[in-house]
Image (cartoon, rainbow, N blue to C red; front, side, top):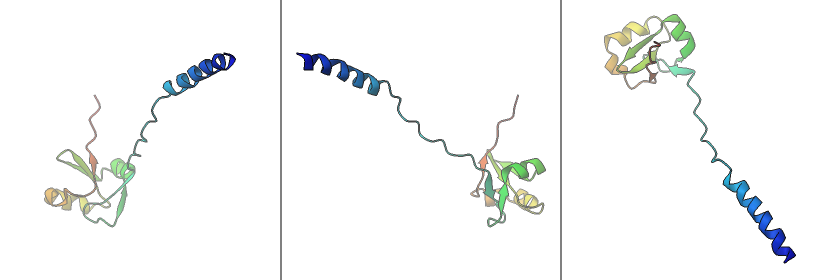
Length: 95
């Protein structure tokens, strides 16, 4: 009888501990900090730096970043040609 008196409280504590545990959250992917230039894909571009310098273009809901001043006009002439390049969603405008 003493064993049963010990087993029941221990079992209820153990079950309570497992029932209260939350499922582990899936790790969130880290936001991109660099992307490849759509015109010269071997050149990596800092998203923050390109944004600050205006070296980007938006096309069909995506934002493309450029490594130099010559790439932006080349993209503007034929954006659909480069639409499969690395990009991010166009940021929403703040109200």
